[in-house]
Image (cartoon, rainbow, N blue to C red):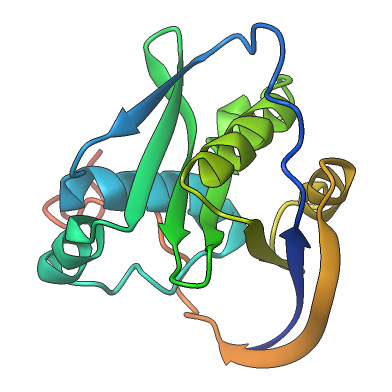
Length: 183
């Protein structure tokens, strides 16, 4: 389905003070994530916000992405389960992109968003970036843009695009081995 999407590109040029306090979760760097785990995070976090661009990736594409030395995956955990994840990519121009950032649907509204984003920013600057940037769009959570701006990001470009969104919404509960009509 052809869909109009508004995109905001934001940047942060000054490293803020390190995150303070106890965020209520632990943060873990995932060394060489498996394609299965990376795709699980992408789908579980992104399905409600129509993240679709990587759903068609092959096992090899996922493997190649996270074999790159300039790409990192971080996961927050609370009570033994993931609260969300972020993906960072260092660029040659001393920029670091927060490629993906989000919370699991059941973790939204529980007070994790602010500190989790602060951790993502801190890790991005720790990679040596002089500039941290990201983009968000009109399909993302309604509070996403406000959270980024309140953490110090500034919009440096806006654009309107039209993209083909798959008509069949991806479902993390999809079970092709189960015949219709069976639980």
